[in-house]
Amino acid sequence: MARVYNFSAGPSVLPEPVLRRAADEMLDYKGSGQSVMEMSHRSKIYEEIITGAEALLRKLMGIPENYHVLFLQGGASTQFAMVPLNLMTEKKSADFINTGIWSKKAVAEAKRYGTARVVATSDDKNFSYIPDLAGVAFDPQAAYVHITTNNTIVGTRYRAFPDTGNVPLVADMSSNILSEVMDVRAFGIIYAGAQKNLAPAGLTLVIIRKDLVGEPQPATPTMLRYATHVESMSMYNTPPCYCIYIAKLVLEWLEAQGGVAAMQKINEEKAALLYNYLDGSKLFKAPVAEPHRSLMNVPFVLPTDELNADFIKKATAAGFVNLKGHRLVGGMRASIYNAMPTEGVVKLVEFMKKFETENC
Image (tube, rainbow, N blue to C red):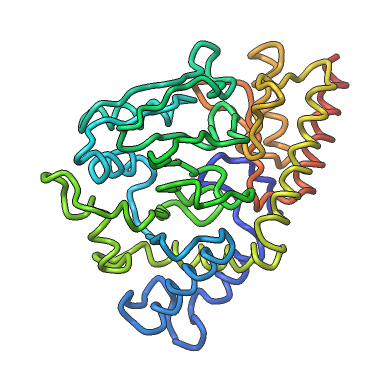
């Protein structure tokens, strides 16, 4: 069977060269006579994999030496608790900008451990925009300020990040990490579930400034202490070994494409292809206004639920899969992460034009 164009929001498409190399190395990784799935995480050969992945990530993202890189588990949802448990110590409050379901969940979890103050929100328009932060007064005594840099479900993204002064900025970058150039130094903590742009589901990446690895709240479990994983170099327990291996292959692939800056240019071109068509269409509509549009997740709708269902059915039959929008939003959503080739977006637009001709 031919490969389909997979527009899933996550787990998502992986680069085909990565999948082919992983297949080639499945039974015998570099002459070891074993799969990465089978080898000890304490072995010399696996140590080269995890240290190599960190080195590549540092190079591609420009991560300074005063930041730790951690390969963890539990998804971004675990970070919703881990961040306040480790940062809400002397200061028992944090500020949040609420731009969607994942921000709301981060707020709800933080409330278990201190005060979570929502300083700006876009819930008045179903999270279809990023709030204007020009007049927002952040609490200078807050433990941190939290944002979600890209909102997978509604398709919005920050183009500029808030200036929080001396208060650490914490970012959930699950759905746009490595998709565009970002200055790591602007953040105290970056965390991301890897299943969008980096690896299969099961790996969580954390980039944390060294001065923020302190003493957490007293009842914090050992596994939820950043210090635990810093001290053990992400190997306090068995890490998600195979996911880290795939992440290393993806990072090698990304480097071969020219790095993050080159990938950003490609992503902007892919997104423009789709948004330009949507803006000129008489049938399809993009609900997010131009200044706030995501490069990674593009929601769009048709005039009726019946047409939405018909489009999804016919698109799936034509090899464009996982286009159904999130249940909270409806319609369709094309997730066009790094590994989605430009050809996939071109062919999707061609299919949409054909569908529009047939239904207008």
